[in-house]
Image (cartoon, rainbow, N blue to C red):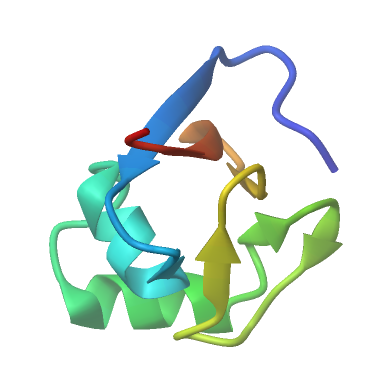
Length: 79
């Protein structure tokens, strides 16, 4: 399940990973941790082409996160 019609956005991290719920907040997909938890648990968040319901899943550089109707995000390093 891809969000090909919506432009891919890069999310820059300054550490080796970011938790999925934090990435969704940083990307502006959700406004709070509670919203992130509900969205992830709903099964609507995909990581590297697979549905993910793990709230604090470690997302690393080059991982792709897709959220229907919100967009696709890829993680890049600050370096």
